[in-house]
Image (cartoon, rainbow, N blue to C red; front, side):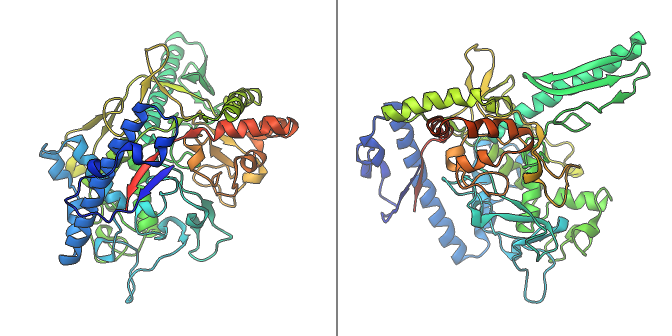
Length: 500
């Protein structure tokens, strides 16, 4: 639920004096005082944000370019150490909502008439297909999912929709916890491989290493006495044993990676670190434009996204709130919720959409990637104590933090109904990462291409690795099907507040 307040008040008026929780729509439900206090805090924050945005818009009209300057934090500025993690969050928030312009480097391969939008991407060059991050992440509230009209069309020729890979933008809640989980899992799996190699080479006996992390099995490795490793029996992960939790096909391992990629393909904004890779011939520049390495898209702007900008947006996304489970208050629906939770397990949905995974270390680290910043300090954030609430909470054992993402972060072959014409970035045209289900109620339409309008449709479209659960779902009673949907739609987010 997003509450939108149309604010016609003067900047001197004080929201807490104008609005109290007893006057707001949710006050007539049986919400706890804790939730009301949370919403009151959100209301105050939303009003302050509204005032700042109005000031920035007016200032930019008076002096064009001021708003991007106020949204930009360079790596050199970060290195001076005068900005807190909260400051980084605020700068990232500004950039997330900022609408880029050609003078900022928006677009690619500018013509005499300037850059143009391209709904259909041109292979690796991308669009651009939008002006800001919020253009595609606003459904259900800010940093939410996209609607069907905001789908992106990847890996085509710039004009053909039929040849494109269609993608729906997911919501962005809880990304910090997901990255931290994936990093721990990758580290544990790679450690198992190193131990297996050491044991095989020192003992002279072949080893069969079962790969398992946080209760999730990724197949096994066969290691010969000479150290040769066979990865033929891996399941749901690539040969490097890196869990990549971002991208519908499990393409990116960090928030920073997907931020850098999204800036380039959706906005035509090329990062300085990406330019450096072209300069060093680590990337084929011809795939991305015709200009020199420092202006590959040939638009006359050489510094478009500096490392500090990537850091601030990454910190912002990592510190966004966690999705929550919000059971219905109505007694009839609550009983359906309880039954639906049982049905979820009975249909084996929990085998892939694992309800909760334990996180040991809640600290995430961010470093610039340009070589010129090799000696820069590492930015660290604590997901348990920093950022937007709700935050991570300890699990029942008290030894780890519970991440209720409803995913195992593995890649599965989803069968013929998911097969695409181009298999990249992995050599399986029908393989996709298990999407986290938390926040589901505010992220319709569903599936990677948004083809399912309802939860029921999404389940019925499951194929391949999801075929068993789909066929069992089709066998159960309509009442149990409805109960499952009620349960899944309780995977939600806290109400958000916008002032307009």
